[in-house]
Length: 150
Image (cartoon, rainbow, N blue to C red; front, side, top):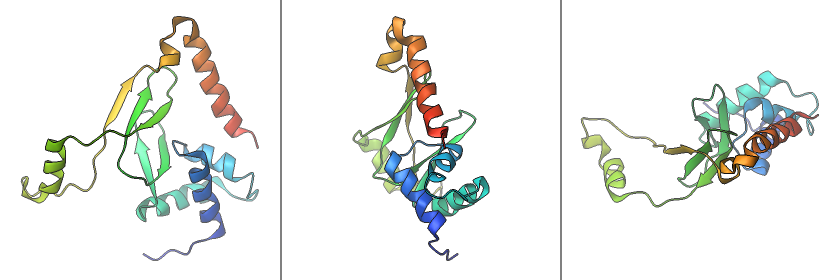
């Protein structure tokens, strides 16, 4: 399906690119409205679906009740803090056996691999500091709240 590159779509994509990704649709909406005040949340959701279908953005579902979006980049993995829910990109070399599986995927029971993901879940350094556990979560909440300011 051919979709026009609308002003709203450009603002949404630019918002994700400028922020480096790992944003929810609601966060993208709040940030994009600063530049496009009449933008609706429905428009953001529809355009994120179009951008994902085009392969321009990737929707990430980490099982945290919301999806996150990032621009499509070179293959990379994610570090997810289970305490503050911070998400960080990590570039690791793909293990040789895994790469061989991806390359020969049509020969694996006829299954065609299109993409793969790997997430590392743990506790970030800031949250590991026992005195900062609550402080780190508060800081993460403040960061999220600052995104929601119009």
